[in-house]
Structure formats: C-alpha cells, structure tokens
Image 1 (cartoon, rainbow over the protein chains, first blue to last red):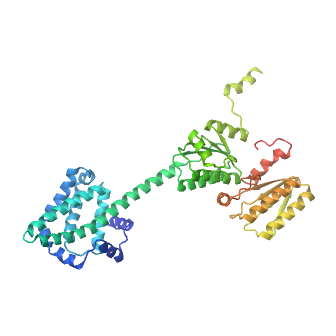
Image 2: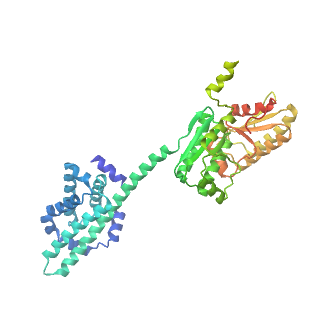
Image 3: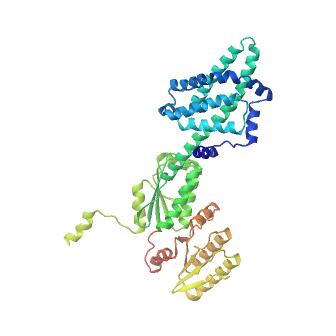
Length: 318
Length: 124
C-alpha cells in the first residue's frame, strides 16, 4: 500500500479537484448523464463477473500482455480492481478516490506490460459488451438505451483519458531513466599518460550531453593536471553548427586553463560539413586519426616513443 | 584593497583575491609595469585561482597587462582559471588569445622556465 501510495505521487496527473473537474468538462459529463448512468447500476452489478472475465479473456487471447497472466496473484489483483471499477463506474461518483483507483490500475497495467493500444482494445471490448446488454435490456426503447449508453461512454472516455496519461507518462519515465544511464556512461575522460587525457566522443551530441562533456573535461583537466587533451570524434557521425560551436568553446575554455586540445578523427563527411558550415577552425589543432593525435601530444609533452629493441640496440653495440 | 605583488628573483607574482574592484586592477596594471623596469623582471605570473567570476573588464585589464609587460621585456602567464570561470569566459567571447595560460602557479612557472633559461620553447 505504501508502494502504491508513493507511485500515485509520482504519477503525472495532479489529483486536485480542479483537475478532476476539468477532465469531466472535457468529456462533457453533466448531471443528466449521472442520473442515466445510475439506472444501469443493477444491470451491470449482475454481470460484473462476466464483463471482467471477457475483458481479461480478450487480453489473454491477444497474447500482448503475458506478464499480466504470468502471476496468478497479479491477475487476481487486476480482476478485483476491474470489478471494483465496474461497480464504481455505474455508481456515478467520479471523485478523487475514483481517479486514484484508475491511476493505480493503470500503473498495474504499465508494470505488467499492457501497452496503450492493447489497453484501448480491451476497453473497447468491455464497452461493446456493456452496450449490447444495455440495448437488449431496453429493446422497447432503443432511443433511451442509446442515450444511456452514450452517457456511460462519457465516463469511459474520462477513464481512458486518465489511464492513457498514466501509461504514457510511465513509459516516458522509463525512457528518461534509460537515457540518464546511457548519458552517464557516454563520455569518459581517461588519463593515458601523466598530463595527457583522451576524450573519446561517440554518438549524437545534444545540448545536455555537450554541457556534461564540457563539465567533465574541464574538471578532469584540473584533477589530473592535464597539459594535453586528445579529443577523438571518430564516433560522431554528424556535426551541426551548434555542436561544432560547442566543441570550439570547450577547446577555448580548456586553453584558458592551460591545456591544449588536439581534435582527431574528423571523418571526411564531418570535415566537409564543417567547411560548408564555415566554422572557424583556425585556432584548433587537428590530426587525422587518434594515433597521430596521441603521437603529437606525447611529442609536445616531451615523450619519445621507441621500440624496446631499438632502445636496447645502441647500448648493446656500445 | 591593493593586490599584493611578490618578487622572487626575476619573477613577479601577483595573486588576485576574491572580487577585486576595477580600481584594484588598474592599480595592479600600473604597478606591474613600473616594477618590471625597476627589478629588471623577465616573468610575470598572475594567479586568478581565487576568482569565481571574470568579467570583461578584468579580462581586458589582464590582456593589457600581458601586452604591456611584453613591451617592457617580460612574459606574462595567467594561471589558475577555474573550470566554470573558463567556460563562462568563452561564452562571453573572452578568450585571452595569444596570452599564455596554465593550470596553476607551479605549471605556469615550469612552462616559462625553458624560454628563460635560453632553451627553445618546447611546445608552441
């Protein structure tokens, strides 16, 4: 229960009276509708189990929500909530409590792999069953039956509005969490010699990532006392003027901290794109590939790389 | 409060404290230009690591100091620009082009020594 409560808080729907009223207004739910819906109460109450089973039978047949049927207690929980829903739906009390229950049910669906279209399909089946029964029970006055059904449909759309909002926002939340995780992994700054850092950049650079990249690099320069940085953009497929500008700004900031940046791995496409954009690259040193960038950086730091046998050679002959 | 200038051999070190006023900076500029001649200094290091803001006036004054000391026969290095300050400066277009910068005082002096000892500048 605690868990459910905290999840309700997380949901994107503000549970205020004003919001609930707004949603009622959107579906045009009037007092007349409420009195019509109440008349359906007994009919629905007699058939609750049948509607509920039909709803979940449909989901099961569709095979789109296996996670919901994998665990018996989850399914029972969902069925219980659906029965409650049917009772509440015809009780014509669409208050805060009703909305909370809709949100809780949507969260349960979302956790067990029911997607928005599948949910909508199942809900349609439920409505159809309800509609058929209403028409049958009032066969003498189809006009009246139709009106009652349309009133009930307003509530159905009220519910759908809430449920799809929750399903979509839950999905967005998952995507955001994954993106954060990827972003954290995406731009490592690595020291490969004393005073020499490499910064391999792979993938798309958006503005948030660019900011993180700059922050990470400048802080690493200070922490590692780096004099040279090799920024490798072999893995960047496309560079627009915004990204290019940001890279140039980062390089200028690194220089202010006393560090020289060499950019390596500009692909043919990227190089041509930068020229076409007219980006001023005059102040940036570049080399073709990572290897020559590292060699250049090491040379500037005063390192000389020799093969072990070459280094040994003169000493042995002397 | 005036900015203190320390002397060590042919080296002058000015260490800026938090938030110097424009007046302080102008006074530093005048005093450095004066003392370079007086002490026959060859190097000037300006430490800005205590600053968390560098406005355009401060940047312009530092640039002016670097150029004036060059004319008076000494090299200037600006040391200790903080990461946030550096990026803010770049976004304001204050990039100190052509002026030597270094991570801290230690690094700045190491960078200037080879030139001063008559060796060739190794990297630029």
